[in-house]
Length: 119
Image 1 (cartoon, rainbow, N blue to C red):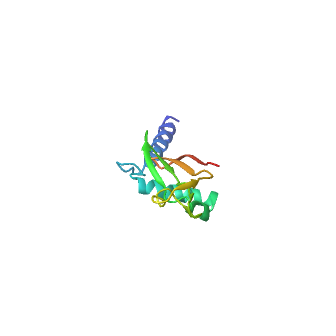
Image 2 (cartoon, rainbow, N blue to C red; image 1 turned 90 degrees about the horizontal axis):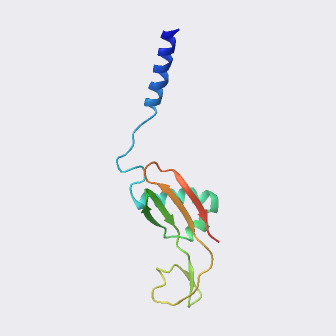
Image 3 (cartoon, helix red, strand yellow; image 1 turned 135 degrees about the horizontal axis):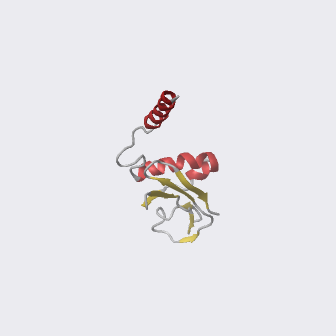
């Protein structure tokens, strides 16, 4: 009986060690470009490709071990067109309606910690 118990403990322990796998030193999400790609990949099935495309460019900021990825709110310019604030540098912005997507991703293991879309 003691031999079987020892064998069972060894098998279970070895399976746990085998499941550890490789972990990159800089984490699975090492930079903002990777964080944005992951965020877009999880946002598109929920909100649709067209909607997420309209919020580009996305920005990613690292804070407390998590990437915070947010979209850009398109605004109406003085000509009545819709542009992001970055595209409308020379034109006065009149109106910005709606919200943007936000995704928080763990830098260490790429878990999605939080995902939402403002109104």
